[in-house]
Length: 269
Picture 1 (cartoon, one colour):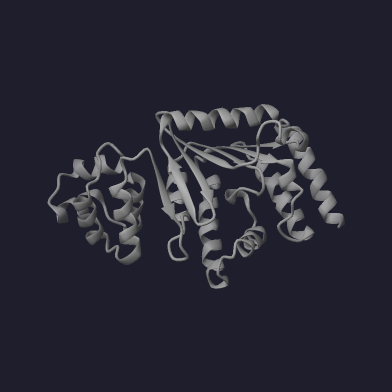
Picture 2 (cartoon, one colour; picture 1 turned 180 degrees about the horizontal axis):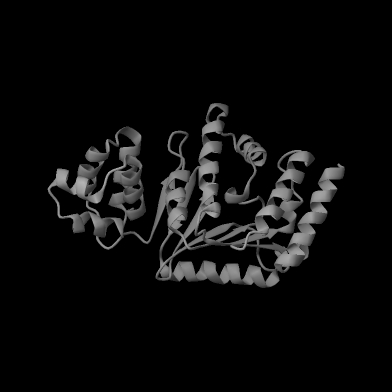
């Protein structure tokens, strides 16, 4: 919730002082809210949203979130008008580390536009909304190229790389793009061999978003909804899950070799 409020203010181009002057607050009050050091009441959020001129469905979404901010995990229902990408984008912008385990698809931060379009068509996203969601995905991906990008560990299943959601040409370009991203110093790519995936239970995705002071949020996504988990015991479970997958995976060099082999195969098809 703190990240949501901070990003909206930044998008409006307003300083802490300017907002607090209008609300009659001490500047420290809004600052603590934006750093997550003070809970945001429904009344305070409603006042802030008036200053930021946030209305309609987006206002309702944020008020719903603030009502549930003390819960250890919260569901966000997706809709054509308010995709879950908004919240995810704000969290990624604050992250210092990312761990994404994906058994069936390429993670969103690493998808090429053609691959993303094919995934969205397969997921029955209305055609008129695809371009706007592609742009949102592009904005999310910029986090990996900023001045101080988060460390990003990507764990993929070999069977997912061999399971094209689009034509061979698109898959070849997608795998080539994966190899290019893997060359970045902040990115490590791990591939769990097909023979090991079942043994380690690699059949569901998980996305761990790490922040300073050892804080972590786990993002789980399914069609139509996403849940953000903040409960420490549950987060520890997902850390153990990622560690188990990492031990079963090929190291980054061998993983890159496997991806390059699959890329060449798709190019020949």
